[in-house]
Image (cartoon, rainbow, N blue to C red; front, side, top):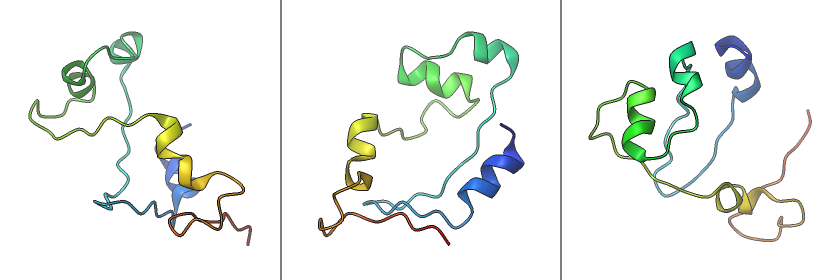
Length: 84
C-alpha cells in the first residue's frame, strides 16, 4: 500500500483522544523494513528518522481499538462506522 492509497482510505478519519493528533504517514526504506519491528522506542524513532526526543505514547492495539469495537455503540466514548 502506498501513500496515496493510505490517504484515500483515511480521508476524513478522525480518532478522538485526549490529544487528537493528526495521522502521520511513514514509509520505511528497505533497510529499516528489515529491522522491523523495533525493540525499543529509541529504535522505533530511529527507523522512522524522527528526532530522539520525539514524544511517543505506547498503547496496546486492543486498547487503541477498544472504543471502536462492534457492540460498544452505547459507550459515550464509542463510535459507529457508517458506510456512505
